[in-house]
Image (cartoon, rainbow over all chains, first blue to last red; front, side, top):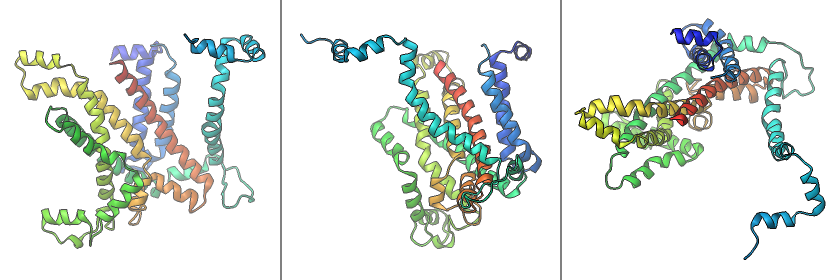
Length: 62
Length: 315
């Protein structure tokens, strides 16, 4: 866990990509869940944030 | 002896052209070769994407091309993301996506595990199993419509044989409760072989020496499966899940052919709903915003897919 956090601070690709992947997956789950409409409403922003983040952080050093 | 091909090509180039090419740097020549592809990519991919994003911010209707176009900002996105009907189509898509993935992974992995064993007729069975995958979705949709017919359909007779129910007492594609399962069954029938092939590639990539070492350590078959087979096939399985997930998220042709989104909107997947908004209601701006939402979702999933693919490649 501490390695993950230090990777985030040192702008390393691995942990940031992991974070972006989690955001994308969360956005997709929010988009398709049948329980709360407000989650559906915000799902697009979460997925978009994750996707844009993924594109940016894939240029970070390993 | 004849001259090598490179020599013949060099002498066949007209001197004027050869002189001109010799004056170009390697980088310039590379750009000349790549330029037509980039131009094509810009024309058929990037330009329509930018145009769609632009349209999604307007109230444009393509059936009224001369009507004034009003800039509405993010209003279309707001409407879509607050619409319970669209939320419902995403839930229908989720039902389709989750069940097809679960069934295809279980059956595909099971079949790959069996096919990986050495037995007579192994190649023949592999060919027979992968046949559905090679058919066109339109053909599959069409003949499954016949199979699902309550009066003459073979599917109803098979179910009736096992359950004792009257074959004409239920309609797979006409019943609100059964129609979502009807499309799941057909997609599973068609695409399980694809998952099987990917799993088979994973199973065949495991070196036999690992199993031999496990045998020496007296590991049971059950333990070998959980500690060797499954962890080593998992990246391949993940790849299959992501690939099928992205494909099924965009599913259109098979379901249109089978149910057309009905009865009611019980099998109306997002892509079918999008097509209705764009080409039946002619709300082009609204449909463009809808398409952008789907695009971002698929693009996000595709990013994860590429990452998983690179991991498999590194193995």
